[in-house]
Image (cartoon, rainbow, N blue to C red; front, side):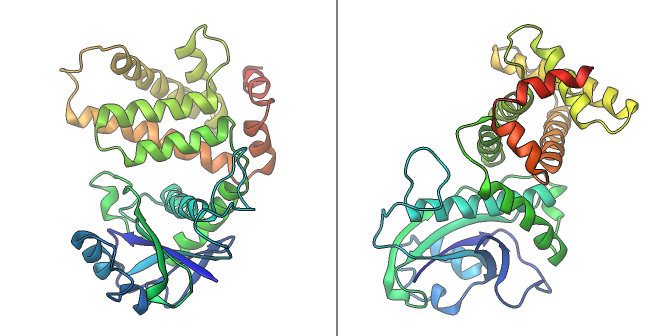
Length: 300
């Protein structure tokens, strides 16, 4: 049995919410890092900084799987092209961190990844890599993940792992992940809006700003006032998205304004996932050909 883990870096919890392996969903666990994973033999192929990351870390995301060798195709993978068992395990770690971000944005991220050919054998390390950290605001950096957060992330992760790829919903997941790992504000903000356009944008190029803002308000708003506020917020946000994309001047944009814009857009993205992922019906709609028709009918 192979064992793979990704160090849950940048997040120390005192007291710890878990004392042993905690299953998030579908065989993906978060657990205290086993002592043998921190041994010199297990870390022999890592850089000095990566070794320090592993030594300092408290938890790891983990999976166990069967494989003939490095590169063996995964039978679980939902995409149209084959993916190796190891690559799919890596994706599970990214999605686990993403599911926790959906519940509560924090500094917790997946980091150094280690694949072992034998569970419990530090000398069986077969592959190493590293995943980019999720970047959050200073306020979000103070958030602490609790046992309740871990439990709440499980259903989100289960839905993410079960959905098919090569569709609007998966594009939204992928672009959001890219945005969360991006430190430069302009690129992060553009990727946030690419994610929203993939999810709620129109197939028609006409009146893009109005139609996207309207759909955001109508799809997420829980009251008339909420829908109006979301519409105005999205319309203002998309204006700045267009300025960045088309080379507009940003000299008058303050750091406080850019943070507000980014937080507002991420809130829309998070609310969208909170509405869609618990519903198998909505997952099917946004993964298939009924998305445009459903969104068009919101106005009537």
